[in-house]
Structure formats: C-alpha cells, structure tokens
Length: 250
Image 1: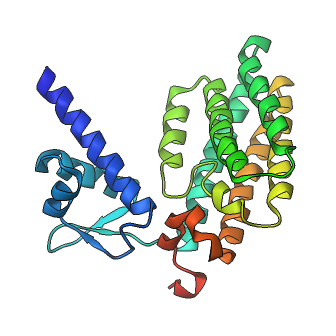
Image 2: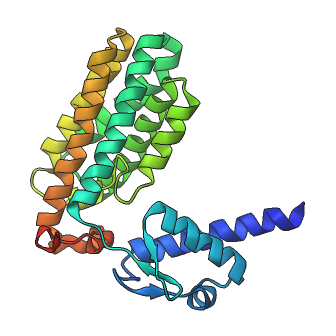
C-alpha cells in the first residue's frame, strides 16, 4: 500500500510545482514543457510528472502537442468570462438549494461569523496588499461554506471543478484588483451581495438567493476587465500574462 500512496504524493507534488511555475509567469504562454524537462526541474520520476501534466491539461492550463509533450496555454478574455459564468450558475444553484431545503441557525452560524470578519476587513483604511491577501482567504471560506449549505455532494463537487478552471475561482482577480482605484467600491459591493445571499437563505427565498449569487459572479467578470486594463502591476498577479488581450481574439 505504501508505494501507491507515495506515487500519488509525488504526482500531487509535481502538479502543484508545475502549476506554480505557470501561474508565477516562470513558464510563458506557448512554451513547450517536456516530461524530461519537468523531471529535471521538479526532481521527481517520470511517471508522476506524466500524470501531473495530464491533470494540468484537464485543468486547462496546458494543451497537448501532437509531436509530444505539452504547451502552456493562453486564454482569451471570453474563455475566462465563460468559466466565471459556469461557476456563478453552480453557486446560484447551491444558494437556492440551501434556501429551499432550509438552513438552521446552527448551520448559518459559521457563514455569519465569516461575514463579520469580512465586514471588519473591507472597512480597513487604507486597504493594504496584506488586507487583500487576507480577503482572498476569507472570501474562499465564504464560498466554500455556502456550497456546503446546499447539502448536495454533486453540486459541491461541480463547484470545486468549476472553481479550478483557470481564473474562475471566487478570488481569481482580487490581488490584481488591489492596484486599482475602484478597489474599495468593488469589495463593498461584493460584501453587500454576501450579506444579501445569507439573508435570502435564512428567509428561504430560493430564487432571490440564486439570482444574487449569479450576479455576484459577474462582479468577478468586472474585476477581470479592470485587471486587464491595469497590467502595470503585473507582479501582483503574473498569471495575467496568460490572458490574451481582446485584440488577440479570433
């Protein structure tokens, strides 16, 4: 049993290391990655590297080259907007199920505690990069707790898959957003939507909860557009280099 466990561990290690190289900008769009190159870079054997490359292709960060190996993928703005829309649709379903199936005060307590922490954070003056980093963690927890309230394992699983799509996570563009003047306004709008969806779930208003979460995802789409217009602070989110400008659309 030890050997399969070790293989899985090495695959995960390779997958995380390669993903980090891509999202940190160390590997550029269109750059070819061979198994041997990855083995030398990461320091694991070929089998876990091969599996890691396949997983990253499934995530959408790589694409297979017919002649062998993989290439770092570039994304259009439309690709990412569609991914965000998929996540928003699924989170809307989760919120509706949570409202319709009824969430007890005990069920809602962790979500309300998280909401209170976010309230304190978004009211900080000034909003530092550290504050935005903390927001990413708290915001991810809010979305995870909301998905759990649906009580649906298939829905939770599909939300996890959708959030793993490149740039589609709830906080996908928060760090890049920290460099723009509209930052506080956007965070306050997002936090108000958080508060409204919790209220809708508590009052068993399924349609309202669903609509708010779908609209909330569109705030991420707004963040994307602002981030792409503000590439001057690329060090905050090097992965923006993977996104083709609208002029590159076909």
